[in-house]
Image (tube, rainbow, N blue to C red):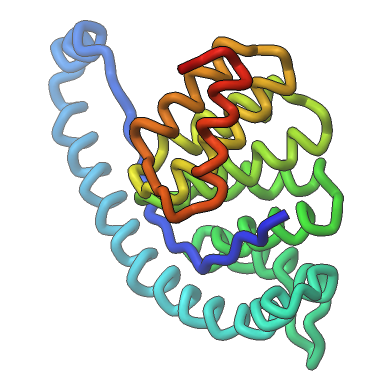
Length: 230
């Protein structure tokens, strides 16, 4: 099983939608409520800015420094030590994820913890921590869903595995990463007897991600022929 190693950083955005008609009636009934509410929103925004600049930013720097020892154990495939006790009195990813919750480094610790558990064969905890990880960008969401697909596949929950492999493919336009999970999607569909879905995935792999220098890609024609395609 290929190891997935990355130091991700993310930004969380929350959006709240409000129904316009009920709100309009409230403002008409309580005309002073609107300026008070806007003032409260301004205070909240100012408070959030202070929180981000005065608390989160320094906390993030501390977290990055603290994670270095756990990352070293991770790179050496010492996954349990990376999770729990990298030595020297430093915290493992489990403690770091909790201690630095709300920072990009704390978020990254969730991903590391999930991959450690995946490599150790503890698939329930792998799923738990991978689901906590909030990946952004062109690569990290695909890596998250691909790892979740692997964990569910190991648990023989093939329906969930297929769903996450598909999400991994859809989450990135990086050819190697998308092609890697598209092949997993195709092979698992074939294993499950979903021949049409498997053939469709293999044909997409041949069409959209041609990489003739790859030995894996050269097998695509064989897979398509095996499924009755051309």
